Image (cartoon, rainbow, N blue to C red; front, top):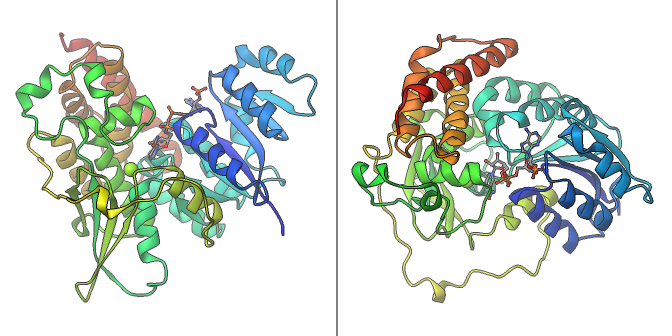
Length: 388
Ligand code: NDP
Ligand code: MG
């Protein structure tokens, strides 16, 4: 049997390291061809020594010598810089590209990988938020499968498997509610970086952990679901489910609902994307109903978490609005992590930036790049005016 040759973009992050745990369970199925990191040279070197990829790339060019020297005794190619990451995905040796880079930086390599016809395991949701229409058009044009890794989207993908061409009545995305579930707007204002980084159920990178606390993450996921499954905003609902056991649901036209369940463990959707359409065994802990006598559900509070309302409005308008939303959010999250703004200021930065950048209904790729840059510039100005 042929081994699947995989490239992991963002190998040193939360998703990247868990993807390597999956690979480790199935050496007969997968072979690591490429690993990339941005700054974490030490971990990238250790991963390369363990998995013996053909190529490693460090985004930060100043660390090229360090990585090169550390791997000098191994037959591993070492490159550095953004362009190398953007180009490597086109290599004829790669079958599967796992996009686990965080933020807008994931867009270009994902697009290149799609155009090179590599199967995509998509963790980087920002790519679809920024350029969902172009990404899905290109995937169709190049006949490139995109398999979601985000747990909600993996769940929906699994619920939809075998249902084609049955129409969908509703996609129901579950949300844990994050660390601030049940809080008031006033109590949210005083939340610190440390408070926001404490997620009840998932251990993830800092950016998505803040997005989960602000519920921007669920907004990004509504937009991601719209593009992945071609379902309009009014047919996508959010339900808060604090135990994170049901990962999402699909309701069909006869009223019947399918749910996908399991412990909150990202290795499961990562493995599913890697092995699709097969399922492989593993030694990860299994869900047991008797450990969870109660699975509960509540409506999201769209007044306190106005990020959700903003995301639906942004999706309704579409064009370059989701791109502006994403850029403003990346800047706001960075400012909050640097303790320059309060938690609730994130919402204000989103709203104000969306009002500042001109709306384009049918942006071309270059116009999206320009909207992203302009939104970042505006968001930074808005942040300067906010006094802590
Ligand atoms: P992390 O911050 O943990 O990891 C990000 C990875 O991307 C690291 O390898 C990092 O390198 C690399 N990276 C960061 N910036 C750049 C850049 N500018 N150019 C190239 N590489 C870069 O993030 P997560 O693993 O948490 O998330 C990755 C993506 O997956 C996000 O889009 C997130 O929304 C999505 N996702 C994550 C989930 C999770 O459970 N973590 C769940 C669902 C979706 P270095 O380590 O060297 O800085
Ligand atoms: Mg998710």
